[in-house]
Image (tube, rainbow, N blue to C red; front, side, top):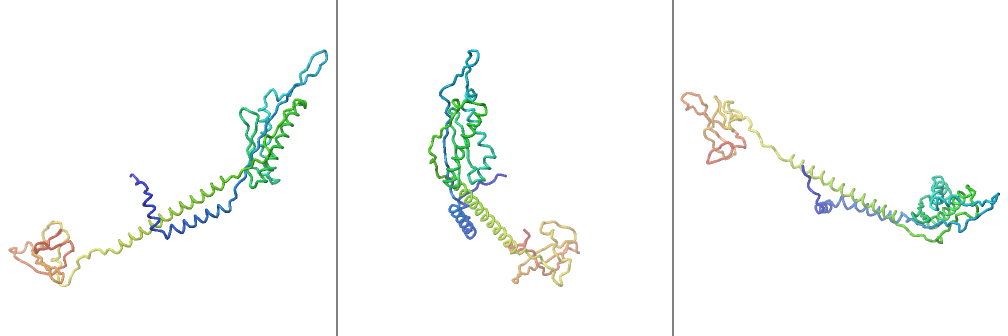
Length: 299
């Protein structure tokens, strides 16, 4: 069975017709949206950039027997991006986030490494400008410490150390309202759906109740009742209306409509002597009998 498409114009008219349901719900939704806009504070996003800088020269030290040994930082052979990735993983550890949260810093941050250049981007989301700025400073400090620790682990000489340089001044902080917008859309959308669904449900319940009341008010047609003094043999069987005849049935010969809405029928009993025996009695005919050409005939 194919469903009819939703007519939004009919739905709008339904909301206006059942305004005593839709208006209060929409008012609550609007009030909740406004309250959320006032209570939910925006976020502050601090962005910082750090670059790895390789050493400019290599150092040669004389060896015994006149040979020359080249001292070189092993991280330089793997590439600066490898060192940056290794230092980055230590800062992104879950324990570091827990430690930051314990001292009041934000644990909502991301660090990304450029695919071509050894430049890292620190992005911190805080509930205040001060929290976002201080968390960024702490992350940069931890990254620099991790970078030095990884190189000293391999006894790299100080002249071959890969250094880091922060490319911003620490004041790159912007206001972000994305969280507030998402919350407002969710609250208003949910409230609107609840208002529409409730209005449609109430309308369906009222329509069903009205149909039941209309059906209950309809009075069925009264069945003919047996009247005193009328022999049972003069009752018209139900099959007489369909034209079926059996032996012993009473055949209505002529019916006239009395002024008092009582129908008087002259009934003849078939099979009596000569077929001229006619009995007359007053009966109440069913409502399915109508007056046609001065005679009552079944439909």
